[in-house]
Length: 154
View 1 (cartoon, rainbow, N blue to C red):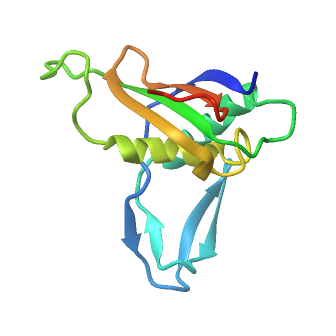
View 2: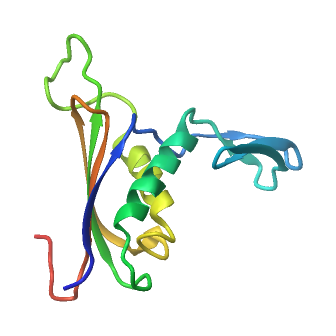
View 3: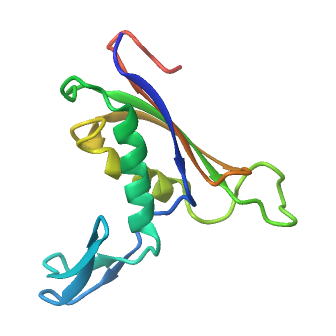
């Protein structure tokens, strides 16, 4: 049997993928752990999502607690994520979160930090199921399963 881990990341889920043009060679803030420093921008864009750094660190910390002891496999993975958001006072739908952030952007902010912890690269995710719900505790419940050639989702 291959890898099959489940973990919960506490905190308000954040989106990734909102970029803003930034002049090449301009110093932009970079946060690594608790240290903040400035580095030259060589990409021409910068991430604009507020709170992404703490969310990324929370994802990494939760994944490190369940990561496998053996080397990271070079195989496909199936990922199921349920993002829980605080419920507004009068939601249009009592359980389903149908406002921003977009599911693909919160999924990206979940998958990228798992690189080097659960898999070598997030391109190894062959199947991805994303759900957004309202819940008492904001966060994300994540299940990662190593897929064999014989397994099919449907």
